[in-house]
Image (cartoon, rainbow, N blue to C red; front, side, top):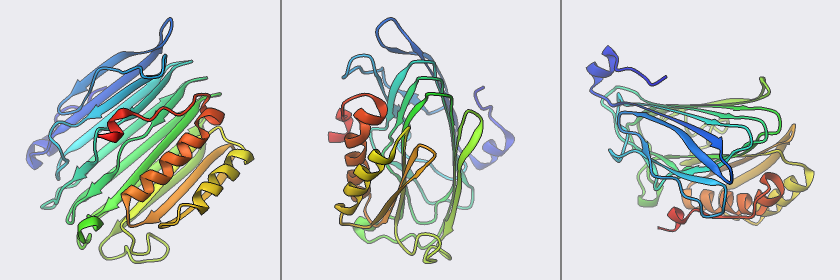
Length: 280
């Protein structure tokens, strides 16, 4: 169901946007069979650079998210489908006068389907008030590659996140059973705490599954050779979880891309195929 315009959204002056995507198995490739949108969220036409896997680029035409904006994205992968979803650039959350910006993602992956959800980073400008929530539901035999990269401020130009707040939640369930449930609530007043992000600007998570001990060891070899920032990997009931903490979105993307390329054939059943949009 697409979100309706509420009195709250009218009062804050923010955009109320929704996008629903449904992928179905065609005769020789995955088809974007359902595409419903409300407000400033859209997708480009599907691409097929590697045969039957559907590549889709998410677009947010306003170019950034401001206080009062609300974005809802719902994606359903039908049985036996395969899709890679990314964005043409970083998502920017701008300074707010007090209203909160909100983005909710609901990703559902049916049996024997593969979803690769690989957006570019979220950049939170100083003063941004942001709530993010991602819910991932996997059925039996579902395959997943997912990452999210949060950047507080713009460290590349020396801009610190000296005001504002991020409230981010990520949950993942397999066949209805919770497997991952985590929340990061960080602001200018607590971001130096060692139990949060220890003063760093970039916090990122990569999930790949199903994975095994061999995939974990291959991942750890890449993590150890990354050099910049802090990174670690663990295996939770067949789900590979990789963390990055540092001060460079470029380093985080480079590490996650290397891990994804190395493990894609073994975990998802396809050789690496980097979206062309990442090179522009």
